[in-house]
Structure formats: structure tokens, C-alpha cells
Length: 211
Image (cartoon, rainbow, N blue to C red; front, side, top):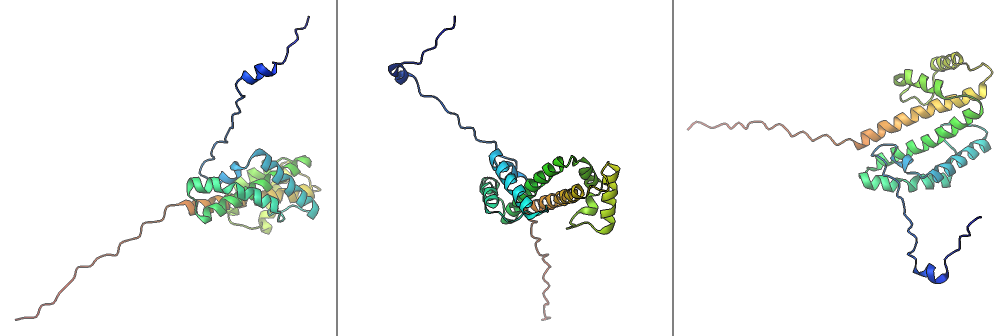
């Protein structure tokens, strides 16, 4: 026989201690270029990625730079102060962390688009790892590297007819380059200034006249 559980009477309820709500503050991200991205809440990341994906779909193509979106920009900018104030970032360091956050968000959107094409990012990342030095600072691939990248994907099982996935793969590769560049700019902005060199003091020579 089931036991009926009765709610407390108003008098008893009034005597009970109030419920305790624990507000969990997310852990402070480390002082790195990833701080702004990691300071975005899960909800904010989902919103920004959804908006970026919709903007790409409306434009009809993906690229390493998403179309301007005031909501995306606002949510990313709102994640900056906590990092910048805690670690006393310079304006250059904050800008680099914002660039990294945008690139990381777009990269995840492109990764999900590749998943829909039944393509994984592993061969793209392995190509980048093997050619990182040659790719550093490049805005786009030259003809020789484009051919090498295509051949690398082909060896990973990508077909010649996979034009749409190959375009996505190139955008994903470009975003890896952008992220690396943001890391380098951030590191340079956060490096302590070199101490100024003191001028070499030369011994003074005085010429004395003969008496």
C-alpha cells in the first residue's frame, strides 16, 4: 500500500528554514589567449555559433571571417572585462583574445558543417601540424600548398567530387592559422618590456694648461 506524502501545513512551512540556493561562479580561465573564449558561458557559445551558422547559410558560403553580427560581437565583448581586469591586459592583448574567440567559434561551426558532410577534421589538423611553419602568417594557400593539401585529403579518403567539403576544409585550415597568429600576438603583447639600456658613461678627460 502506497504511503501518501502530505505537504507541510502553512504554519509548519513558515517555520522551516528558507531553501539555500548556491550560486556557482565559473572558474577563472587561465591567463592565456583562450581566456575570453573560455569565459563565454555554454549558452552564449551556443547562441553565437547558431547566429554565425545562420549568417553563413544566408550568405551562401563559409569563410574564416563571419559576417558582422551585433549580437555575436556583444556577447564576445562582454566576456572580455573579467579576463582583462584580472590579468591587467593591454589593449593589444585584449584584441588578440577577442580575435581568438571569434576564430574558435567559427572553427566549431565549420567543424559541425564538416560533420554533416561526413568528414572529420583529423586530416586537416594533421596537415597543419606537419606544415605549421610554412603556413604561419599566410592569409591563403599558394598553388603549391593548395595542391599538397588536396593530395593530403585525397590520401585520407576524400574524393575528387568532394568540392563542398574541400572548401570547408580549407576554411578550417585557415582558421587554425588565424588562431596561431592570435596566440603569437597575445604572447608578444603580454611579454614584459625589455629594460632600457643605460648609456655608457665615458670617462671625462680634462686638459690642463701648463703653468
